[in-house]
Length: 462
Ligand SMILES: [Zn+2]
Image (cartoon, rainbow, N blue to C red):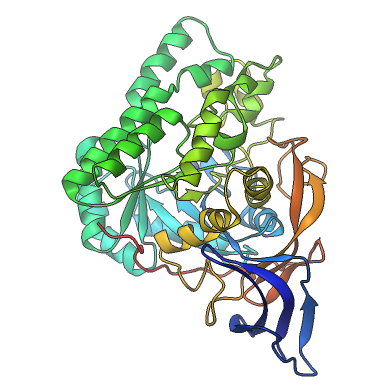
């Protein structure tokens, strides 16, 4: 007994065509015109619908202990929101405690995810200090399918590494088939400004934004790329937020650097004006890097359209306004950083990217699914529609309409950063390895159906 998706418009990063898809078990077993159905097969009519590969969000923080609290979505609620919104695979960041083995942290993250996630998942490993024992563990971690590492050039005194440590991680990971990404903000600029504003009694959410200027991102992008060039390794920039940072990437591409960049919906659709809302409301959007002035947004879209930005992830890391964001009511440095958007990414990108003519439908598939799979070693099992690949599919109704609201979201948090955003085009049915996670708009997924993906080396080389 299989499933046949009939008469859909199949869209990949390269093609768009009418056809049927046959699924047996967890796998796509045939793609073609008028595929024959056996009597016991289930048939789904996808006439007038798009069939997309399941989305891949390579930047989430579910259940993350951070800033004296824990991010509000568990692996179950966060992945449920993701899959309901068309994202069938995510990659979360393991953040080890200093002085403890990477393997201990990985075990802790596996425990939070295994048996709980409803979408498939992998992990990146953050390196927050580079010691002999960390160095020795890196090859083992890669063998376990954690093939990407992240260094922070921000969060001074907490996660921030210096240049020597970044070089060492680039060289060590690169030698064993791993790839390095960076949080590109200069932590020293940020701490200088933060201390200055605190001394001046400027403590409202607006000063979080002011303490994270775009020049801090541009500097860190430039420095990271210079060190990656020195180490002869590719570099992936997570959550690129500013036109200034993008300019540095364009220059790096022109000189032949192997640079990959990710942005997030918030840096395409929301602006820093929100920080100046009265009554502490701006705290809802406190994140690092922060939102940028409105004139950055179209430039970031253009960066995607022109191929300077390869992926759109979320940096999903929600905190309730009540009780969590409020921890920083008297001091912006105590506002937990982050927003929810794992469930919104796919649909926001479609409505405001494809729907508004900023990116093509193929580019949409590339940035939400295919490029993340290729860059992070999951292709072609994930991220495309091919015979032999996992049957992770989104049957998408381009005529369906909706509106993002805290009242209807699946995220486990008490507000939406996108409240009132209209959507045109929504997932109607979502399959994860041939099983229904969403059927005719209704979530039918199962706790623990998500599976750990041991990833191969990145499809990108130095
Ligand atoms: Zn992050």
